[in-house]
Image (cartoon, rainbow, N blue to C red; front, top):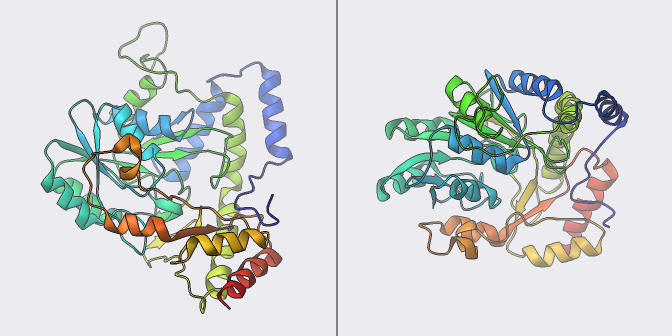
Length: 362
């Protein structure tokens, strides 16, 4: 294991105690603890509703179903993301269309999105990804979606607490989705969350994740659904983690600022943070033409790194032949390298990381 790992999930006594309380209560599956977590997460995002799910992928799948995406539809999204962003579209019965990214923010380029919409028939929705914790350009993307009467589902899996123009991500689209995987800015172990201001979307999503039951439950099934529910134990962890999230994010931002300052004269491109956005640095991702060489050197120096993502989704075997125009994403996939930025990175760790990069360049 690296001396400075790329990720270090943090669980404390509060999480352990809350799980113990749930275990002794006997209410282990979906129940009041999950409802409380949903209410608190909705309040955090500034939305009317939040629906907990078993993971981020099931959140995306359920949200797409809830906004009406289905067989014969196409959905524009980014090829530079974890594959779940596209898999959820396929699982909902639709087909992804990949538009290119902005080279500075790594997020969907609104101009490329509009070009894809004009090029393709039957586009029903757009799924922007707030990659690495930086919000996508939501004002322009929402304008494009409005012009073409498309649904918007935010993939906020990496962006808990990020903001665009002072407004928290997860509150822009018809729905938004978060992941609670262990390496995310907050975790439930495994888990996901859908946020929305639309009552109809909330009702359909809640039904879909619970075997197609109506809001009142019981054994009437009004639609075909899945068992995508979150457990009460996961929700108990999530409620504590949500309380810790602002401090976690501030630590990530502080570490990112220190890295950017120390690497100002290095031969790498450090992350950007436009004035209208608040980055929460799920990943601190630099660009370098010697990505593999630098990664090997950092590993030798005890510094963990990550390559997110080495292969654009449209170049994955499962998506061979899917429509795309993405030269920027293809180039970025060869250059991107993520450095440790999580809350457990110390000042000494930061010096180790930056000294190793400067040493490699000498």
